[in-house]
Image 1: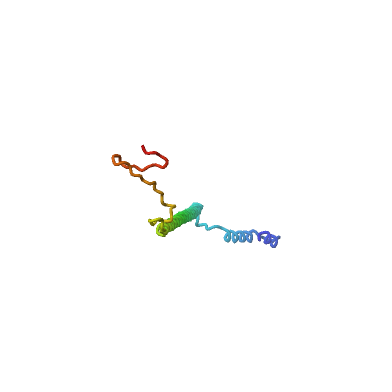
Image 2: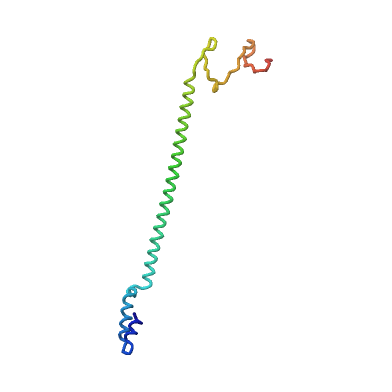
Length: 141
């Protein structure tokens, strides 16, 4: 704008017009004269503090969310383990209560022998000695 005005005013007195153009430019582009650099610095520090607090809050929220997710995963895992234990115990209970009894000689006995241990036969000893169970393949002395 200044160069255009200079070109228009060539050969005439132009100092006053150029000064007016400079004043208009400064009014449009000048910062608030009431504010000092110190005030601007304080405002900038306040904005930065607000940003730091906002970031800290977001970080804390993310940590809480992560902790909640971990708790939720642990709870779900615990519940799954508990349900599996209940299922296993029910199955074991059914297995024990659903034993089929079959005739075997004069006695009725269970047809399932997986969980039952076979007992060794006990032979009575002479009345003067206490009775002890005999061992397979061993001799009584």
